[in-house]
Length: 145
Image (cartoon, rainbow, N blue to C red; front, side, top):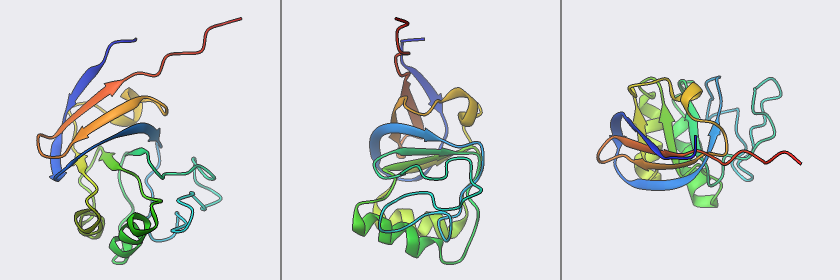
């Protein structure tokens, strides 16, 4: 598919951002799975271990709640290692929302489709937290030699 498509969701944190998708079928904890200084997933058992979330639209089924998640997400924004937006299937935990508000990182959730299967890593994604809209431009598959 080469045409863009839209997914209606629930806007949780206002703002607009665009970037390449980084998709995980596993939830993530901002208080232990990520390194603040590099933006890398450091949990050795996580599906996207070693990948950088910096500059991406992070697409998850859910976040793993923690009272300190807001500080980690906000500090990632201060260091420039944060995802530019977060798209989740379920409602994010309140601490993550607090960090996103402080860091100006849009979040949308409860989409009309499962975003972890309808968006692929590398797709270009525009997130509109004001309208609760996700626009996806699928990555062009590599041509066969």
